[in-house]
Amino acid sequence: MRIVQNFFFYSGLALSLLSANAFAETTNTPVATPELYTAAETPATPPVAPAQPVLNTPLDWLNAMQQAQAKQNYGISFVSITPAKIESLRYYHVFSDQQTYAQLTTLDNNLQEEIQRGDVISYFAPNAMAFSLNGTHIADKFPNILWANLNEVMVNYDVIPMGFGRIANQLVRQFRIIPKDNFRNQLRLFIDVKNHLLLRRDVLDRNDNLLAQYRVVSEIPIANTEEFIQHLNALPIPPFVASQTTAVPPFHWQANWIPAGFKLIKRSVIVKQDQRIESEFYSDGLFSFTINVAPSIIQNAPEKSWTQGMTTLYTVSHGKTDLTFIGELPVSTAKRIVEEITEKPTP
Image (cartoon, rainbow, N blue to C red; front, side, top):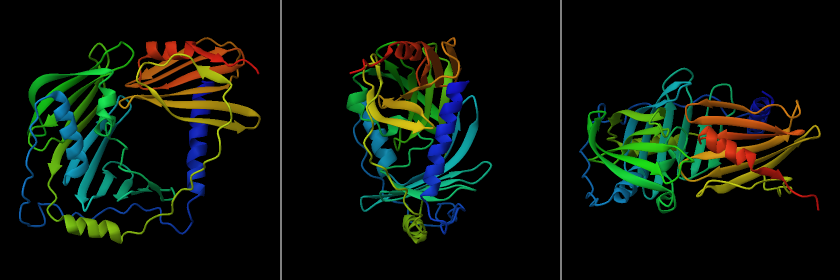
């Protein structure tokens, strides 16, 4: 499929550009943290539990969940499940002196790590140059709702309490987040009653079919937070990837219909070998998608669609141009978005 090839080609191009900006002397070996700071191995006085907030409404629970994720000290082992693969990961998180220190490590196959020290996030992977970026949190593999603006999200979703359950040997409160329209998927959340960490998130379609899952397998208390912080601070910081702030050329095409609540986050134009690809990225805080407009190989080819889990790809030819949707919405929504993309009038 031409548009799939374009998508992966330019994704690889972007990764190559990132690697090219890193200095050769930076190590490309992940730096696994010695597990000397877990409660099982380092005796320590148990910390005093903070006062628990009063949670009267579903929104109170979601706010408490976000606060727990961002400001508590904890470790978790979890799995990320899609129809394509199952990934096992471990995550340590410490919040100290208004700074976040965190480490995300893959537990299967090649070792990959992301390490956060304050607003600096460093990425390590085999056979790739390590690099750093500025950021507020490690987002990879975690559900978007952990950092979404809940007041904005709730304009387009309803939160429904669903009783209690048990996940990873912990009592949890269950909620459903259901869209107020028929253009997107729904979520099911399982929040730890005691510490308010999110222990499971299911993505469901409108027929309650499971599309993707984030699930904590076990919680890992961190006893020696100072040792953890000292270890991360002792690690070298890989070079920062230079960000380009060049102006984006005017677009030749425009999206005339987008579901309510989705905002344009980023747009770009790539010109290579006289071929022009226009791209726009949208998000409503929970789900996201990209629209790509690129030259087609076969003019007026029939429409094509592909869905795997929560990922949808839909493409249609418009003369010499392919219009493509890649994102986390149902194929019916993707089709309507693409069908209402039009070429701007020539000035």
